[in-house]
Image: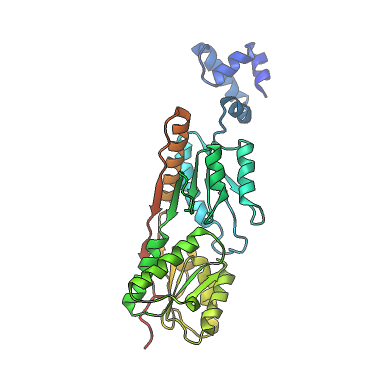
Length: 343
């Protein structure tokens, strides 16, 4: 059943049917009611694509995710919880969230360009931000409302939110230092994602404030996967002068690290203290329990929803856009994996 069929059945013009369905003026209350009842009875719904083109809007907010194919345990559960909070805000405004997966072998900049040129969304959230990220400059140029989930080195005005990597590094080093550790290693990302650099720089600065120099042999760059964690464990064990503790930029490293240590008879906490990052199922089921950090991903998603709506509404009203910048806090959750060093 299409709009032409309804028009014939009710003996009403297509223009009147369209105005009634879209709640526009020029239609009597009685006629509008007849049209709505007929549409419901015959299971008719308007062509959203056509309506969107006419309005110059899609009713869609895009979220671009670059999946990590090797991340077998954590998967994209991190983002799924964010999506839940984000969609709850968008739904209240009659909008829908669309997830755009950019394959790991695709160029992220080209992926964004295709979405924008096809006018697929009214606003966009991009993630996995590199230190220098051409997607940000492109979206600023196109004047599409967008938020970067992560910081970059660009100084051009745009909205962004990021986790408090500096705060996590400081809390991790502070805990280990108070427990008595002085030889502390830092495991960060092997790629150019900016959060890895932020975490490493903050950890180095935190150690320096306590009179400790982070030497190159205590910096480990690994793929953020279970396999990367296993490799990290092997490299730590191979050191002649092993560290007594290690901090991790992401919890996907922990399963592999625990496994490799277990193979060598090394017990986390007793023989090597470990501090993870964001709380996840990985840490919840590890034994000994992992010291890690709690954050509210649903609330983070709600913040994203509120801010992208503010950007869209400001653009529609022709108002000056007020860009938002937010560092999202995390709270340490002590576990058994961080203990005083063995004497």
